[in-house]
Image (cartoon, rainbow, N blue to C red; front, side, top):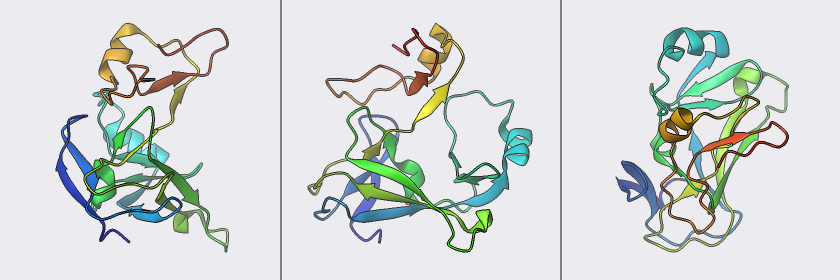
Amino acid sequence: MSDKIARRRSKIHGNGVFATAPIKKGETVVRYTGRLLTHEVADDIYGGEDNGHTFLFILNDTYVIDGNVRGGIAKWINHGCAPNCEAFVIEDEGGDPKKDRVEIEALRNIAPGEELTYDYGITTDERITDAERALWACRCGAPNCTGTMLRSTRKGRSAA
């Protein structure tokens, strides 16, 4: 699954994931892997670290995937406001939330050398402060870049 990608330095932020071979629209590119934690345990471990940079992926109502431990290359995929990929939670057919998984799929054809991005989908129902906007800054460079990875769900409020 991940034989068409590699980690490299990114112009967006630190490390990134780049196509090393053509990737077709709809193709599953990579699975997001790491240690499985309950939300409560993740909060205990990382709750005080509001640094805008984590490798936690919300899997379902009970669990998150912690890419900091046993995480694969997918943890290095950066956020983008005009993404070429999308992350999907695939629910376990047997209904076991521990067996749900996250797969990253191409939204369009991706050429070798292109950096992979997806919208992190970080939402809040609170007003986004200037400090939070700066902490969660987006540097994707897309023409429609909002400048932040955060999105407010409050009516009449925007993240930008």
